[in-house]
Amino acid sequence: MKPTLTIRGFDVFRGYLDAAKQREIVGNLRSVIRTAPLFSPETRWGKKMSVQMTSAGKYGWFSDRRGYRYEEHHPNGGAWPPIPEAILRVWHEVSGLERAPDCCLLNLYRASAKMGMHQDRDEADFSWPVVSISLGDDGLFRIANEERGGKTESIWLQSGDVVVMGGKARLHHHGIDRIRSGTSTLLQNGGRINLTMRVVD
Ligand code: MD3
Ligand code: FE
Image (cartoon, rainbow, N blue to C red; front, side, top):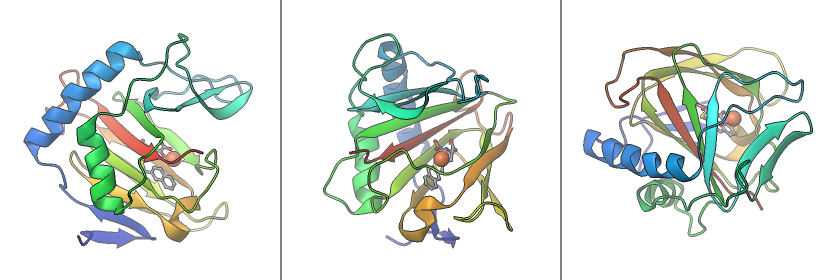
């Protein structure tokens, strides 16, 4: 399948998930959150992130003053729930990989939440792609370079969009500048959910 557009090596599949599929996935996520409640991680500098998170899969992403890492347990001590089938299907379809991801990280952005520019480098092998699914309100996604600084490009990600970050793009800096509230009715309380599937080991 061909991406709608490619921006700095990121393949964007616009409207990949129709409304019914998006609702199915949101239903699955409600059960994930019941088992593994959302929390706001602390950065290395002890500041609470504005994004709320949880995970599904063998590993979940976690952060506190000790640093960024993957953990086999939720901060409440329980195992992370399995990654829902409908989400795994998207990974296999767009990546073409047989191997399943080890982690599905769920980021919830309420109206004023954002995510600063960063690289994802807590995984062991950067040759595996990362696949992202956007649900709910539009989010302004900013893409920079592998090196710090330099020119950036932005695109609005909408509910149902899927993005594949592989190859050289895997180590590009990126972030979410802002959320456009009220652009989607998918989530009862508004906001934006982003799912990222990763191979961790
Ligand atoms: C490029 N999430 O969870 S998704 C993240 O919308 C993250 O919540 C953003 O950055 C969000 O780490 C952006 C797009 C994305 C995700 C992972 C990447 C881009 C990526 C990993 C490597 C390179
Ligand atoms: Fe990231």
